[in-house]
Image (cartoon, rainbow, N blue to C red; front, side, top):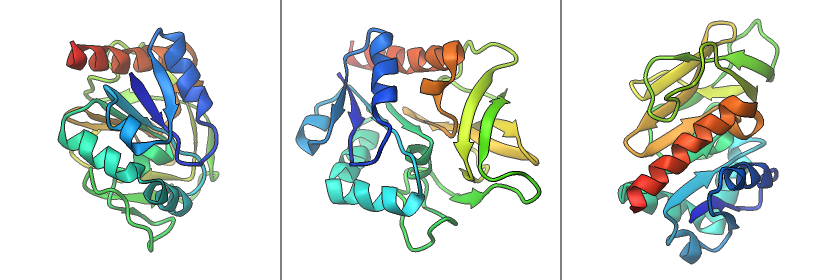
Length: 202
């Protein structure tokens, strides 16, 4: 079972439906005890870093994330859910991230439209999650902030300069773009995640 964490923010069903389309047993889960039994975890996120961080903590699902990561359960963060894996964000310096990945989330460069709301091309350096994506791989972004580039970065896009599009560390993956809104390329990426969950649970 893949738990799509439901912590009271919007637009969760698109991730759930995309995973179900691939044949995965994906479910929206708001109960930490149920989420703790999942074979894979997906943390979506839309809106602002601060409210999402607060909602995740209030739901008690933040502890599920930390526990899943510590146990090597395959984990995927999407958009703000990806940003929450870092230590914090310039969008709301008073809000703490989960600190699963080192670094902070930064505002997109000056001189470009905020938010980036468009399809863009991935420049993949290395990635298990992005294995097999076509070249070029077009994916869909909606964001004004992105994590800073670190050794965990696996892909960037060009938006006023290189902008982090994905990262991974062990069984933790994150995408700043929305795979569930990125057509066949996005479904291929989610299929890689489902395969990782199945391999871990086998």
